[in-house]
Length: 46
Image (cartoon, rainbow, N blue to C red; front, top):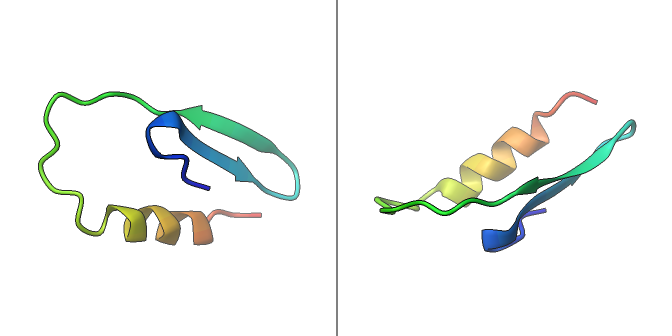
């Protein structure tokens, strides 16, 4: 689950964890970023 600037939370059958967000100096283009994030999460091995 995306948590905006606070990072992301994930859970599988075997584990769950939180990944911290981080600041960037210059955002270039966020178009498709959420789609790419969700696509990778859907392919995560169980």
